[in-house]
Each structure stands twice: as C-alpha cells, then as structure tokens.
Image (cartoon, rainbow, N blue to C red; front, side, top):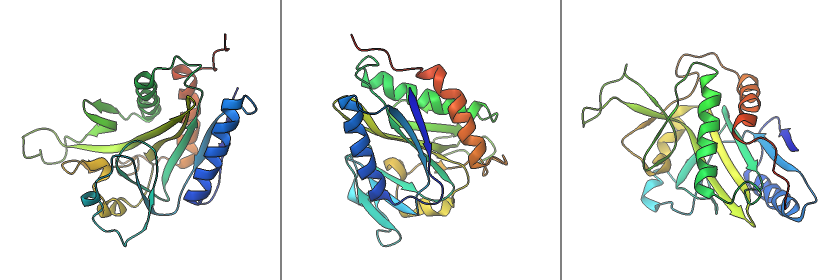
Amino acid sequence: MVEWITSHGLTDYRRAEAWMETRAAQIAQGTADECIWLVEHPPLYTAGTSARPADLIDPDRFDVFDTKRGGQYTYHGPGQRVAYVLLDVGARGRDVRRFVQDLEGWVIDTLAQFGVTGEIREGRVGVWVSRPEKPRNAAGHVAEDKIAAIGIRLRKWISFHGISINVEPDLSHFDGIVPCGIAQHGVTSLVDLGLPVTMDDLDLALRESFARRFGPRPAHG
C-alpha cells in the first residue's frame, strides 16, 4: 500500500526533511508503508548537491536551505505543489534512471489531464512546456518554460524528496535563482498558462495518474 498524506497550510522545510528521514528509515525497516506526501512550503530556495554558488542571484531574498537531494537550486513557495515521494526503489527494480523517468512520466500524465503537453529534454531534468506564443529564443527555437522540477535522494534504496509542480506560485520569486542552473528558459505555471486549476484539482490528477506509472510495490523475494 502507498499512503497518501496531504498537509494543509505551509510546512516548515526542515521539519519536512526530518519527517522524510524518519519515514524513509521506517520503510526500509518494513515498519511503515510507502508514502506520497503533498505539501506547500513558505517561500524559500533549496540547493541540491550540484548547486553552483553563482546561480543564487539574491541570497537575501528568502531562506536558503542546503539539501542532499540531487540537482541544483530550486524555489518552493505557496501555490506550488510539492509531492515528496517515499517509495521502495529497491523492490521496484533498482533502476534509478527508470525511476526518474517514471517520475517525469507521472508529471506528464498529470498535466495531460488539464490539456497541457509536458515534455522532457535531453540533459535537462524536469518537465517543460512549449510556448509558441512567446518570442523565439536567440537560437531561433520555440520558447520553452519549466513547469515542474524533480530532485530525489536514495538511502537504502528508499527514495525521498520528489517533484514540484507550479499551480499558481508567484513566478517572480524564481528571479532570485537560476532555476536548476538553466538561464536560457523561463518558468510557468498552470494558471500562467490560462488554466483555472486549483491545488485540489492537481492533487486529484496526481492520484489518478500515479497507479499507471508505479502501481503497488512488488513483493520481496
């Protein structure tokens, strides 16, 4: 069984990290079920293990948290759904690359329920949307904006951290960092795309899309 937990209001980031550490250990020990934890955070920046100091443009704007998840700088804040993914990757094939692809696919399937075509790009983790209505970039390519970020960590083959999807955050809050180290593309949200999607709408879509990508945890042995 995968337990789904939704926290209302804004969740302190360090409290969330501590909770994930405990729950991941319990899953590894077989004393707790796998879990998807849905939260929102107050405005903050997080630095993954590949974060470059130069990508923190405005270090005094919000609290900045170093974290041991993969990736670079990301923003979390109100209007963004963070889904912490605590799953037994060991029982699901021990294929980290496939697991990240499944997370990307989960986001893409979820966005499709709102008529949004999410895409992945070689060399860029996360999910993107094409913006043909915007001016083309310097290379003459169609503009692209990031709508979802992905950053995970594994301990004893249990995943934690996870994904974030922009529903209706203040997009100007991303200006204090180079999101995920990629300066040449923008950031968008479901509401920015003109869709009146609520957090409850997204949560329902996430649950509906989850089973087709992950299903139940296979039995050990």
